[in-house]
Amino acid sequence: MEKATENAKNPAPLKLLGSWASSYTHRVQLALRLKGLEFEYKEEDLGSKSEELLRLNPVHKKVPVLVHGGRALPESVVILQYLDDAWPETRPLLPADAFDRALARFWCHFADDKLGPAVGAVFASTGEEQEAAVRQVHENLALLEAELRDGAFRGRRFFGGDEVGFLDVVLGCGSYWLAVFEEVTGVRLVDADAFPLFHAWLREFEALDEVRETIPAVDRLLEYARGVRHMLLGLAGGAGAGGDATEAPAATAAPPAAAPPAAATDIAVDI
Image (cartoon, rainbow, N blue to C red; front, side):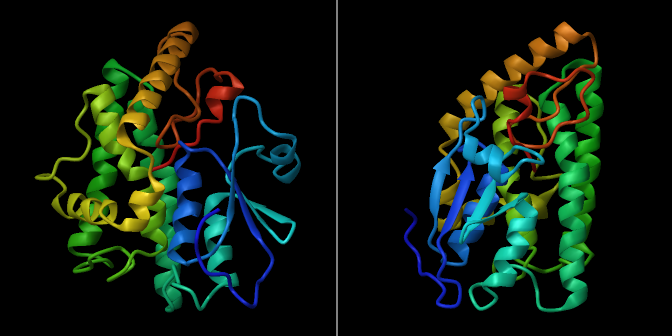
């Protein structure tokens, strides 16, 4: 049981169904900790999903799922917004200004729809296909770097300002996988010289106590990532050149040429 305070207006218990290696799950865990909300955590075996998970998330059948007072919500970004709406007085994640809120949501979509798939493709491929994916990752990081340097987030310690916010949670609970991927693939993705502001932001994010409490040990992540990459490359080889997975351990991968087994496709990943 996580130690935190409970909101008097929302006394119903909170329960989170998740997976230890899922950065989508980490988003919700981090948000709950930042907002000081007490919750029960249930680890799901994605290779043998519980009846509870299938019942609570019949559409996608994936983690995370937040249960509040017996009512279930899937999808990490939806859950984060719900937590802000239900507990507005405890460490707001989204900014108060309507335009800034919309901007944070836009860049969250960018993380999930552009940057994440590119990182996943690097992890799940080799050779020329991987080189093309690396270029795409760098193009996407350059866009974030430009926003930190000259755009809406200029001069900020975090994307949310002086404290981490909605976009920091979404980006950060996936960006720590970049170092893991670099170790496993031997491919450099985030160069401090090329992306100094993004690199500095990531170091600041990783140093937070709540983040350290949320993210698993690097050795465990490395072991997990090596096993998944071996599996994905084996599947790609069996499916023919160009095949890669729907999902990989840290960022949503590119659309598959051939779908891997259910246990592989449920490895939650995002950047």
